[in-house]
Image (cartoon, rainbow, N blue to C red; front, side):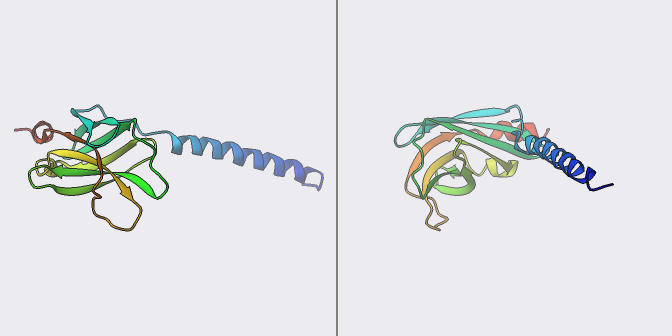
Length: 155
């Protein structure tokens, strides 16, 4: 290829790279579909405003727990919302993970854990390196572990 053809070939290669990147980016950023829920639980405010819902779908011994919150105040700089499984009788908590700025989060939870806990708690946490639950629960809702257990393990 002569010198005159090189710039044209470079432009064509760059255009193909940009087009390919756009297709890959679209596939990566497209949200995963939420499985249809076997059960749901309302998240009611503990302190302040806000509400939400927990959607649970059971598949192969695992529950996809999707938390959707709305009307929570925006977390201040250095703070974030975090989801927990809660046993209200003992106040024992198991961390699930961070709830994103969109107010949504999904977690894979083994069905066996649902019988050990009976509620979901969303807290406002400080980014201070302390992995424990803060004193600020903002949303909480009870769920029944038994229907998910029954759906996962035929009798």
